[in-house]
Length: 247
Image (cartoon, rainbow, N blue to C red):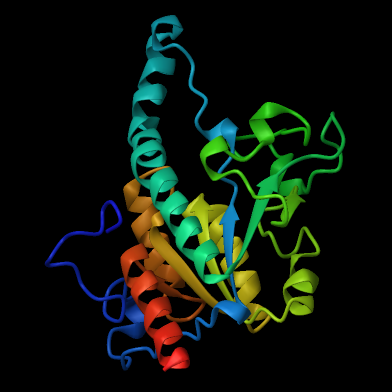
């Protein structure tokens, strides 16, 4: 059972996260989840997003900002990382292709970054590709034969050769997890949907800066760009489809 997924009163993935546009829509059909044509894509779960300063060294304004980010960091450590780790294990056991995307500049000064990562503000991020902050967190480290794409864009599709790789491997369904729900995850999901992939977003394997942003973005992208579900629901669907195929 995934963390954050044991609420007996929780809505099914077929009825949860319905936006204004889909209030009266019929229940969606389960996406195809054949391990041979499905990939799990872990997006931007990198060391930089767990690094925090010593709060005792901060000014009052900096401490307020630190405290505002504390719920995200708690979700990152206690929900996101363990749930993705469990999902990786499940997918690897079934032969689902496991892939990773990370923000990583090829040039140390970051001049190869896209404009969205150069403009002033929070999203102005410089992560040279060999440095520790740009690496995927150790608990989720890719295995030797698993693909990692480096990007300087929000979307893992527009900024890499990911689409070509998926096509070459015969992948038709992509399961997306990672950070941030309303930024790189959402941008990747929309790109994949536009390229006619089936997309699943695992809600308890994603995080945004706040829970409100996380839930709002899931409502926006659900049904039109992807199917949003919890990790226990996803595992049950994969297992059911594998069992039906083997029967």
